[in-house]
Length: 226
Image 1 (cartoon, rainbow, N blue to C red):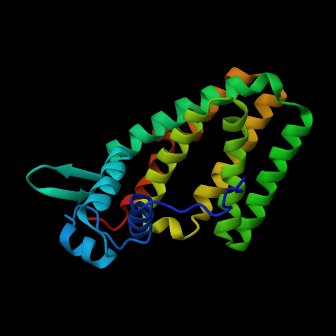
Image 2: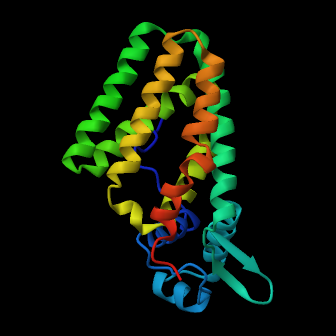
Image 3: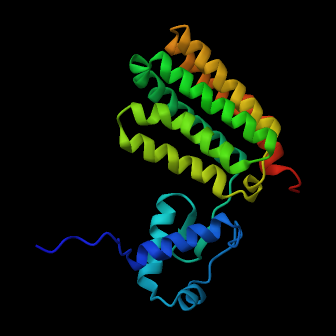
């Protein structure tokens, strides 16, 4: 019997999708601008079909808007978009924490505190990659334990929408990130005290509370805009 190849050959649609996501991530596609589909297809050396399919996926993920008469526009984030994303992520992560809480052991809390300590060291050193890795691992602990893969994928997608539209996230915002780690520690304190509902509410209403975080949001997303 022939053994399956260890290499996964991606479809043209997947390759085009990943290319466009990379272009969005590095700011090569201006928000609010309309895409020249003929130029894109020629540059990528593909037909309009895989390009169209990739754009349909990007529209489903809310990175672009497809208008039958006007074409395909790169979406931008406004205050209301960010507020809604925070509300959605906060609700989903709070639910994940509550679902995971009965199985959390003292050694789990110690491991989560180690992640926070790693984040703080990385923030002090200006190491963005290490900080984000530890930060995501902290949140993914609860998402991975709650047992619903669709919820995890949706939260990851919504976080991508918050960061991949904004090239300012290529830099470390020490005050905001340090504040976030201190909020993590409060969540752990509440869990250690046996108050899972309080920890979930704090995660939803403070850590992902748009009104609480709005000053940082304004500084990072909108500073310098007319």
